[in-house]
Length: 108
Image (cartoon, rainbow, N blue to C red; front, top):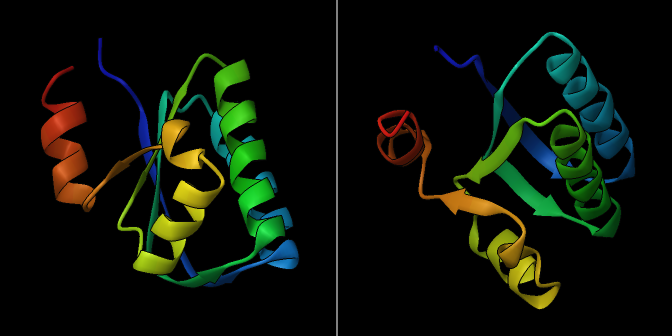
């Protein structure tokens, strides 16, 4: 069985406005039948609380659809935020897309 994997590359600041876009994008991706969603934060400079909320909401959307969500390429600010809010326990993060491919896709 081949899984449908979608990579969503975000950039700039993940705030309320961008968070709402993210929620819509994730819904569309899941509705299109994706099994695994990888959110690449390599180009994201900063995440605020509403951006974090959007990531949590994305995770809930993905889980409801019995799909999986992973995050990669988090910078120090985002990693610290994940640790402070204990979201590092919810989101499985990878160093980068290659790391994800090696650990997740190779295991399928």
